[in-house]
Length: 308
Image (cartoon, rainbow, N blue to C red; front, side):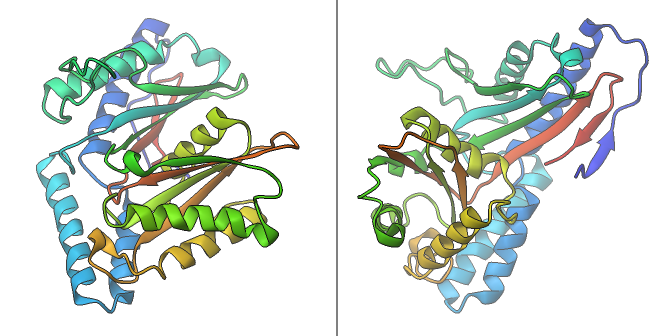
């Protein structure tokens, strides 16, 4: 549900005027997203502190929360590395005339020039830096056209790229999934063990199951990026799997920052799609504790609702 509403209602705006107002709203949400940690994640951190028995783990999470508080108060980036922006869009027929790709890309460049984002985007082979977080494929977009929607919904997620070093993919056969999915579960847990404290735990872990390689990877990113980390999966089977894997991961003893303790992960989020009878692709996607995301809905009368 929307958490707040802002923006004055304007009747008779042209599409060009609406595009300007949308750009202003997106920029405001972008800055909010990169200078704060999502409230659901901070709340989970507070609860994890109360459950922790390790003084080192408690101290680590208290320091992380203090860092997030200072960043929000001073309107500074929570982390020195913004990662790669991924923008998820749902748009109705009447709002399809707004050039979301152009507008949001300009906003990312502006936020970089104003110091909210470190310029980290480079050519993949030459390593030449564009200097403003722009370039082919940046930001990354997933756009869904839903003709009957009366608004344009936009969620921007920044996921740091240190954790990307530990992402993994495997195409299982039905046999290799194992009895009671033990092969699948072992794969996930082994990747968390291999990563240790390097992805800046407590982590959020996105898992994509199904489709083909590209689909599983996209599902894993989406699941950990736009779902609230304290929500529950509406699919009962996937929900049980999320809770089981979260419990097993938190028994590994890696802990926040790798200092030990019971809080290696705050959440496991699974995205699922049907696949071919011969395969089961699985992607594992690490997200550090810095959950930077912001979402809003923009209506044709100029109203804006914050949803994340």
